[in-house]
Length: 74
Figure 1 (cartoon, rainbow, N blue to C red):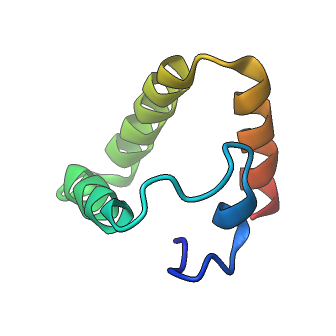
Figure 2: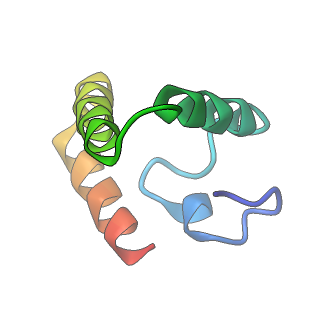
């Protein structure tokens, strides 16, 4: 998870940094709540659906490719 001082890969990923700011903690809590009570397989399916929904929302193949590369490095 991104630190407040930006000392990790999130601070320099393709979209230019941590755009959620303090709301990042709220998103992380919501993400964990979405997984609460799911089996490993259900959680993996949720992650796959979420990635596809977010990719569609981003809608820019170059940005998505850069984010994939950043995630693999992380």
